Image 1 (cartoon, rainbow, N blue to C red):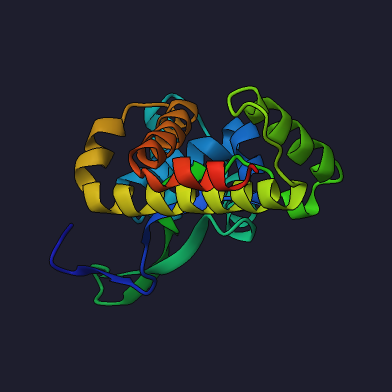
Image 2: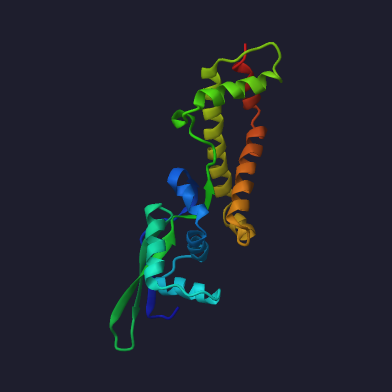
Length: 210
């Protein structure tokens, strides 16, 4: 970047963002995923995004790229996050929009919201029934199992966010060449392993049964 060019970033990028609901639909669209991967390099102008495609041997029109970016903006995964201001040979100032990912790392919170699930009662009942095979001669109320599932899932997501933020850029460096599906599996697996380390959950499960 020359001395006559300056980036002004107006948004603060999160380190990690949990995707839920419609946000998760992005991962079924490889075209949108490709834009997200390109922006992993940092804030970029439309011209730079286009150049990144050309490096891969692809051509994308500005109209197509604007459509991708608009969709990602609606999903709150990418935002116009600032301006690149430069001066041309005639001393005239010009600016270009910089596009920024809303987070350095995305992962999918893949557990359904039981409160909104039309089969919540069956899911809760089945969970209690399976656990009964390990906790002989005891039964658990559906309400206690429901609350336990919600509490465990909320804690798992919270642990993931805490641990990933603490690990920081070192984690990003390791995952730079890893596909998002594998990243998602890794992060969710880490969340479950972290839960196992918290001994409190064994007691909470047992407390549901009487």
